[in-house]
Length: 53
Figure 1 (tube, rainbow, N blue to C red):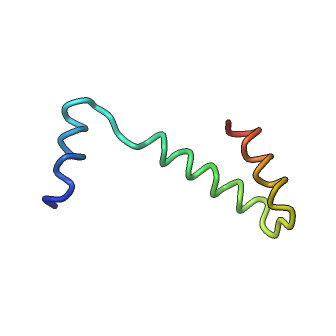
Figure 2: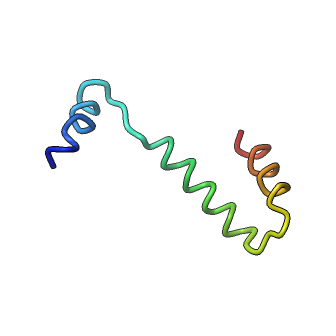
């Protein structure tokens, strides 16, 4: 618990969280699940950046 105290206090001081990063990670996971078995990784990364960038 003591190792996380700065992050916990940061929320109360600045009202900032990592919710946007977590949401972005969830979108990437859903996208990966939709296109499971992709063979062309370069095209997959291109689609990922065009949709979410």
